[in-house]
Length: 322
Image (cartoon, rainbow, N blue to C red; front, side, top):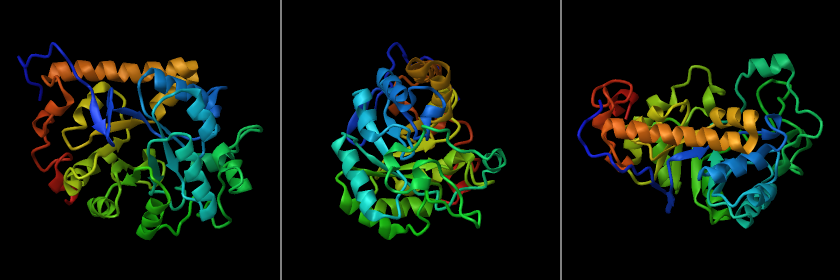
C-alpha cells in the first residue's frame, strides 16, 4: 500500500547489524562449492561482494579456504558453520575464522540430516576431480570430497544429528564472534535462541531443499519477529528476487535479507562482476521501491506498508502461531 507526497528526494538504504552500519540490507547467504559455477569460485564471489558493499557469509563447504577468501577481498566476511562431530576440529575451524577476520559465526541449525534430494541421488552427483570442501580437509575424507549419505539413506557426515541447545552454549564458550542461528522457523525456537545468547536469527527453510512442504520463510517471519521482540536482529533468507521483496521484509520484522541462487547465477555468467551486478540490481530496485512506497529510509517502513500485514493473513503474527 504505497503512500504519496512523502518527500523521497534522498534515499537511505543503510541498516545497523551486529554493531556495524551496512550500506544496504542485502547479504550473500552461504552456498557451497562455488567452483562448480565459475573457475575462480569463492575468490570471485568475495570480490563481487566487496565491490557491491555486501557481507559474504562463507560456507563451511566452500571450495576456497577461509584464509584465501578473506585475502581475496577486504570485505565484511562471516563464516557459516556445519558443526562437526569432532569438536577439536570444530575448535580449530573457529580459531581459523577468527584469525582470518570473520566478523560473525553463522550456525546452521536446520540440517541434522540431509533432505530428500532426489535429483542429486538420481544424477549420482559427485564433486569433479580437483574440487573439494577446503575448510573441511582433515575433518573427514568423505566430507572434503563431497557429502554423501549413509547406507540407511538418512545420515550424512556433513551434519551432526546430536546437536542440542547445550551445543549452542558450548559453541558460545569457544568463540568471541557473535553467534547467529540460521534455519529458525518456529517462534518458540526463536525465543530459545535469544535465551541461549544468539546475537541474531536467520529465518530460513534452507532454500526449500530440506523438509518437503515446510512453511515458507516469509510466512514464518512475522511470528518469529514478534517472539524475538527486537532483542536481536532477525534476517530473512528465501525467495528474494526483486527489490520489492526486500522493501516488504522490514514490515513483518526483518532487519536484512539474504540471497543465494541469484548471486550464483551472476557468478556463473560473469564471475565477480556478475555477483556485483546482481547485488547492485537488487539495491537499485530497492531504492526505486522505497521511493514509490513513500519510505525514504528503511526505518520508515512499517507494517501498514504491506496489505494484509494487519490482518490474520500470511504476514500476520497471529496466523503463524505467535
